[in-house]
Structure formats: C-alpha cells, structure tokens
Length: 561
Image 1 (cartoon, rainbow, N blue to C red):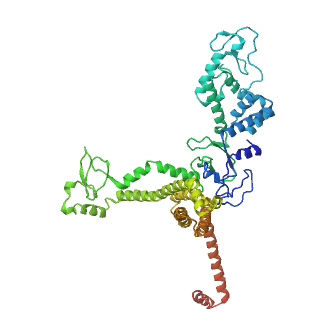
Image 2: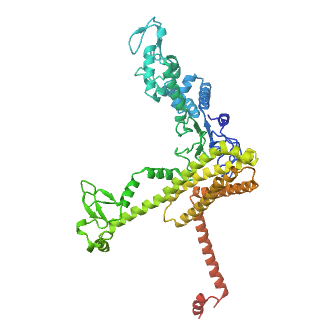
Image 3: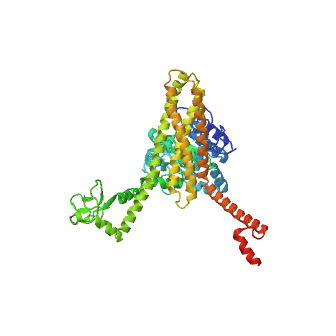
C-alpha cells in the first residue's frame, strides 16, 4: 500500500484517464505539478469507461477486487516479516489499526506487551494444555477426544461443533465477526481467519472473506468504494493536490471528500447546502406561502386557479370569501368593485392593514423566483450533460466509423470530435455547479457578483457555440453521400471552439477556486491608484504656484495676501 511499486501496479489497470485541470501524465507518481490544464491528452478511448478512460489523475488510482486482495496480502506479509509473527496474527493487528502498516509498526515497537494484550494476541496459553484422553467443552460441557477440541492462543477448550455454531452466529450478525474473541467471557484472545477456514461452512467462509476484503477499504482512511450503484471498484487516494474529484472506471465521477458527484470548483459545504435545499420541505412551504392564502375560517391554504376573486373553500368548510381582502363574499357586490377587483382591499391596503402579510408573501415569492431561476439552470445543464454523454457513446460506437467511411478519413484523425464531446460533458458539469455557487453568493458583494456573472456568461456562451457546432453542424457530414470539401473547415472550426471553450472554463474555474479574489485585488489596486493620482495631482498643483488652479488658486491667493 505504501510503496511506489504498489501504486504503479494498481495504476496499470486500464485507467488511462486525463484530468481536465491537472495536465495529465501517464506516471501516477509524477510529482511535477504544473499549471492546471483543462485540455485532454490524446489517447485511445476505451468505450467501456467512456469519460473515465480519458482522465488520468496523479493523486488517485482505481482498484479492482483482485488488486485489493493483492494489496491486502502484501500488507499482511510485510507486517508478518518485520514483526516475526504469523500472517493470522498480522491480519488481526492490521484490522485493529485500520490497515495502517506504519501505525502497527509504531505501536508494536513502542510497547509490544500492551499491543498484544489490547489486540488479543497472546504469547503463551492461559490454560495449560492437558494430556487427558478426553477434554470437557467449555460451552456444552460434554467430553470429547482431543481431536474434537479446538482452541485459540489462550488454550480454552471448546468442541468443534460449538465452535462452528459460535462462528456462524457471529458471521451472520455482520462485520463484527472480524473482531471475534474467544467464547470464554473472561478471555480476550482474538480468533483469526484460520479458525474460520477450519471450522466454518462454505457459505459462512464466503461471507467472512467478503467482510475481510471490504474492511481493507472501509477501515482504511486512504481508500473508499466508488459510490455508484452496483460498482465494485475502490479508489486509493493520495491527498496533496487540492483536487478531490475522482473518476472511477465505471465512468462515475465523484468528490472524494464528500462522496457527492464531482462538483469542482464549488466547495463541499455549498454543494451540501444546495442538495439539502433541493430536497427540503422549506421550498414547499415557500411555494405555499407565495402562491396560496389561508381560508379565513378553517385556515387551510388555498391556491387561486381561476380569474375570479370569488373563492370557495373545499368541503366540509365551503366558506365563500374574497381572494383579495379575505372578507366574506356576501359582503361584496358592485359597490366593492365587482368580481375582478376589490375596493375594500385597496382601501385597507392604503390604511396599512395588509402591509405585513403582503410583505411576507412578496418576500416568499421573490425568494422562490430566485431559487427557481438558479435551480432550472442547474437542472438544465445536468440534463444537457446526460444527453451529451449519450451522444458521445453513440459517436464512439456507431457514428465515428460511419463518418470515417463517408469522409475517407482514418478514425485516428477524428479524435477532435471525441475531444469536443468530452469538453462539453465536463463543461456542463462545471457550469451546472456554478449556478449553485451563484445562488449562495452574497447579494451585497456587487462587484464579485458582476465579475462572476461575466465569467459565467462568457463560458456559457462559448459552450453553447461548441455544443451547437458538434451537435448540429456534424450532421451534414454524417448524412453526406461522399467526402465533403468543407470537412477540413469544420475540423478547424470545431478544434478552435474546443480550445476557446477550454480557456473560458479555465478562467472560470480558477476564479471560483480563488473565491473571486481578483475582484478584491483589483479594487485595492484601483483605490491605491486613485490615491496616488490624487496625491500627484495636488503636488503638481502646488508646484505651479498661484493662479494655476481655478479652485485652489483663489484660496491660495487670499492666504498669501
């Protein structure tokens, strides 16, 4: 786990992916971090991994089940050799210390006796071995010949039948079976997987081995399972780059820190608040407050769904009232303004009787409209991204070969189309999360909001041009009967749009990750510049003497006199 060779071996598992922001290289342990790059390295695409096959992050690698087992056994063997203990004892130690080889070594060499006692690895049996022809089981209290008796390092004797039942019960109780102890209540001796292999049924052994394998990932702070449904890959992550976005071989991208879908450049706390808001009942209450009024009698919220102001509450209430003033409808008529107006409401409003209620309703309505504005754009970009992923897959599996035949161009020279689609997919993801960022950007920071909206608008405009080009302009070449002389112009146009869009989103990502700090620095520079200009101006004025300034001249002349 800790060696560079292990990391490199794990990286050789078809994970040829390029990070949009990392300027990807093929060396997993390459520590030369240059400027972030939003582009792509030209490598052959793997259809099964789709997007993931185009990204190669230097700070993580994807592990298959066989790689997990290999890493697990390597750690066990390493601890066994260094500490001169059995592999069973080494696995018990590693599980206790969350599969941290370094932690095991530190604790063991600091106080071996304490570690043995804590973990349950005893140097000598607690019960002295007996030479009797029959031994009594400590659970069922029947006598058995020695070959029917088993014990762990403590030496407490139990028959194989009781052992099997004890092990089976704990395995069926869940992953706690990995910390199994001697059945004797007063004994803390650990039960290793050798006893399980020897006495458990095949079904129980399979469960135990599954728990044992999963513990290597779930107890290890450097590793996590891919959260995609049905995915059995794990991620070995090395912190340090500041980028937590991870792309699994199953093509699912997620944030290592919060395990939500990848959301760079927006931070995890913003994403958490946004997701909670999308699922919270508070938005339902805001909608009810903004679009309904309580029945004056039963207080149930009522939505106005027709033009008339005459409202009738649902049974059993059936109260009839005016939508505007909430007064009884029987008090209304021609003198109050008729069916589509209410003079009583206007008079009451002028007198201030409805100010607080209307203010609350107006605030709720504005809040709902603002949230809807950002949510619709967030959701629309997600939908567009999903569609782009489908289009990319279709291009890889069907249209690329068709286009190659019709334009008489090798598929290797059509990679600019795949790169454009991949750029679109990643940019849609970034753009989607910028709307969550914009929603939580404080209203009072006007300069930051203007700068953010400018960058977002430029990026979105570039993305729409790129998306339209690859989605619409490409169709004529797919449907052409033969090679088109305009295809090279299309290649140049699409490659240019891809590059321009990449630059737009690089600027957007950098700005958001810096917290739009450029606005503050620009304001400070402007302030300093203004101050220096002012100082220079005044000194220049003083140097010219009397009468040089219409404003200052008269005052100086009067002073001199």
